[in-house]
Length: 560
Ligand code: BGC
Image (cartoon, helix red, strand yellow):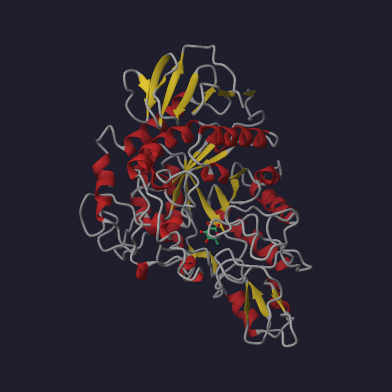
């Protein structure tokens, strides 16, 4: 089946951009304190420019006690001193632009840190005082109010309400240290509009909006339909769930009014963007990218799909069709700081619950070689799909998930909140290896905040740079070829090349073909631009992707 280009109106940079997610704490440590920082990132910008990405996304770098990796903010206009200063941030923005890249930053509007002055003020005030209205305080149930106001649960596990000293309860959909803001409060609305303006004035090119499906809560405070279910968030054991219609706190229709106001602000600054992190049912995602709302919304279902040609093809086709209804483009993601790295994930047996897997005493076997092979194929798939692609730092190196972090080093709050049932997300947050030796493999001059396993030396940038077969070389080549051959205005057509084969055509001749079956398959006739593993007797082996400039224009249409 054929879909025409989704870019009738503009050729804005973001529509087909490759955006590289920097997890600042673990990217490069410039001041030898074991934590990544802005000066480290600045020193590594040439690497990113050379890799060929169009933009970087820097996660929350604001003042924070880091109880949830910086998603717990105490001051949205200040940089965490661990990372540098506002002046460093300004220099970074200039440097990124000088390298002809763009920079987007995180906006975290669902909650603040409990150490934010507003929350401190709220806790010190009596019940029903106006300063409490910036957050969500409620009386509890029962004669003495000792039962939480609703049955809502936190995405990190346990109840979503915490009782304050005066007996009222406050809502925290995440950690107890992350009280939810009240988005029906005007001061909250105005404050975030002003925060957006602050960073836009400093020159950022946009925002990735954290928990974009949160924000507004049902003011009637009903219980959720089925107890603990209904937390469509990566950290929750119920991650496979997406919120049902009219859920009391996820994906509520009222939140779109807020987004429309943000969009009108962002639009005043030219070609800047808003990207939604919204874990919602796929059919609800287009609501987030309406013309006057977000530019992009991550397609998390792509990341959640098994390594299965028909499942992925369906996801790709549906996602492409859905975003086209809004004139936007798809946003493909294989990994981020919340999920298991793909070279490990793709080595697990089908249907494995990879969020729970690391903590299970009797684990399904991991095939690390298979995972690494599939991750290379997945890279060619992701980087040739129409729309924008978000890469997570280290995926270009093929880094595996770190599975054996000492439990005493685990920093992710989900570990404690799940009663130590889930090891959490630190396994994908281990600092990047740049060199093959040294106290932190070139990450910095001292031991890093999370220990790197010895095997990371083999994945170091220095070990891969001059190796034409390395994962880094594959990404570099793919990004260069993407620029040369793929265009936002290309037509897109799924191709039927047999069972267990995922294939599509962009424009007149570019074909991406991924063999997800066991038997080798023929490669379309034409010029082979790149493969994720060597061809065998001219055929594409299992778990391998190829980019081909096809001279066979007969490309049959999809059987989807
Ligand atoms: C972020 C997580 C964070 C959570 C709470 C998520 O969507 O990606 O890392 O823990 O929001 O802010």
